[in-house]
Length: 87
Ligand code: FES
Image 1: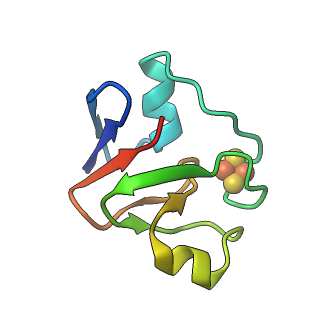
Image 2: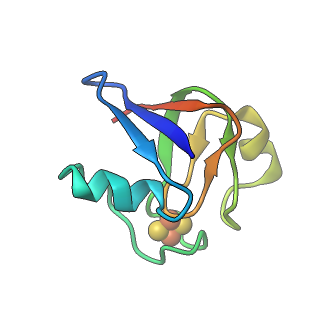
């Protein structure tokens, strides 16, 4: 598991291994637009302010992935213990 911090509020949410970031956000009524939920469409792309994503999508280019400043919360996870999101 890893943690997601909501950049605008400082709220910290635990993301368990069996849930996506989008699923956990929804349980706290934090809505991010999404569509495919499988890393293909790019609808959910979200800015990352701090931390290192574990990119699992097929949408971002390798260059975009290497910059670690955006990720797809429908399927991607984290290599660092916490991701701070620009939401
Ligand atoms: Fe399609 Fe995340 S919802 S890439």
